[in-house]
Image (cartoon, rainbow, N blue to C red):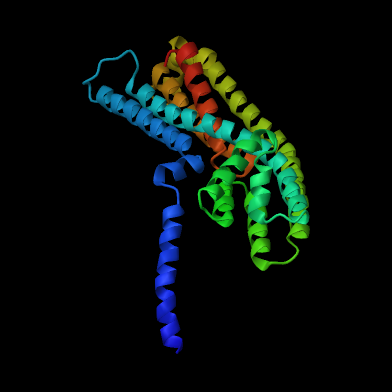
Amino acid sequence: MFGDKKKKDEPKKRDEAKDEDAKKPGFFKELILTGQTTRLIVIIATIISAIIFALLGLLSLLGILQAPLSAVDFFIFAALSGTGIYGFYETMRLKRIYKIDTIFPDFVRDLAESRRAGMTFTKAILFASKGNYGILTPEIQKISQQVSWGSSVTDALLAFANRVRTKSIKRTISLIIEASKSGGNVADILDVAARDAREIKMLEAERKANMSSYVVVVYVGMFVFLAIILILCTSFIPAMVGGEGAAGMQGVMGGSKLATQSEITTMFFFACIIQGFGSGLVAGVFEDGTFTASVKHVFIMVFSSWFIFKMLLGV
């Protein structure tokens, strides 16, 4: 008896699965909804530009390409193009996410009010998509579009969390999904989620304000280091390797040949580039706790080192 019932239910389940597959949006629609096209374009542009400059540097190193820039300059440009394009894209994206994080608790609170008014979770989201939440409005509309195209509320909310990629929103979305599955008093749980998201945002803002002073210290240390190197290369080193200074140093070193001013300056140049790279990584970790935030700092510090040595010292 139970076997016959199971056999009858199997075709019905297959039909339901086919209907769900038919309702799912296509690949390109899904890509647009999840907001990954811009990020993909930026990553491709970053990789292509870095590869082009690296190839130019390799050709210059082999003597095939005759250019006013050296092979080292091309390799530095490869690093700068990689960090610059992606870094400043991430900066703009994080600023946008910060604004979304600020408005998100209001959206959750409105969902709770809609649930109290007797709406289903799906209708509450569709109703919220007609409201004005500033920069968050397009994201809510994407959630609404995914739901209207046949995706489940859970999938639409998870896609939203993956687009934004912040700890507070992922945590709140997980709480909302579990609340909707549990079947309890969802409105009260949504209120708690909104309050929790607001408190997390306040803690993150407080942490960022406290750590900003450390970022400033890293920048000050980097540019003080550059200033000292600049003074050494323009005054101390020329006096040390030229004239009576060079003869005195050769006597101290037992008559061995001293390095030229160009060699010493080049050594300092590489030291500043490495220092800029490391300081940029540290500044990003201090600022946001992730290496993604370090990319723009690496670009600024490495470019500053290259510009100072190229324009002022002619390396």
